[in-house]
Length: 122
Length: 108
Image (cartoon, rainbow over all chains, first blue to last red; front, side, top):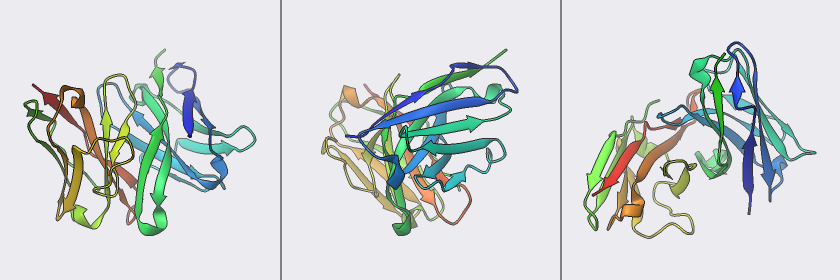
C-alpha cells in the first residue's frame, strides 16, 4: 500500500526559496504521476503541478514562473521548489499519487500525504 | 475553467445530503470528490463521476450530467461532517487540474 510523507522547513522568509520533499513508500515513483497540491489557511485546494516518473512536468500557469518539481528515483522522492515566496504562499502542502489515465481523459488523486505546513514570514 | 460549489450544506441525521459542483459542460468531463475532515488530508470518496473506492460506504454516490455534478450522501451521519471538494481535469487548457471551492457539510 503506497504511503506518502511530506517534509519541509516549516518557516520560510519572504523572497526566499521553499523546498519540500515527498517520500514515497510501497510504490516505485518511476511509473506514475505525482502531484503537489496546496491549501491556504481556511481556504480551498489549489493544484500546483505534477511530474511523471520520467521527468515530464506540468505546472499551474499562475505559478509556472516560480515552481519546479523533480524526482529522485534513487531515494523514491518527489521534490517541490517554489522561489520568491510571499505570504500568499503560506499553506498546507500535500503530495498525492495521480490515478486514472490521461489518455482516457480521467484523473484523480489517491492517496494523499498528511501534508506539511509552510509559513512565509520574516 | 472553474468549478462552483455552494459554501455550505446542512442536513438532518438520516436524511439525504446533496452537494453540487457546477462548470461549463461539466458532464463532458469526469469528476472526482474528496472528503476532508479538520486537521486531515483529503480522502477520495468518488472517482469517475460515480465510482466508490474500496472502503467508502455505499451511502456515498455521485452523478454528473449537463453542467452539474452531484455528490449524494444517503442517510447522512454525524461522522460525514466535513468539507467536500469536487475535482475535474480540463485537458483543453493549461490549467489541467481544477478543484471546486469546497462545501462544508453540517449534519445537525
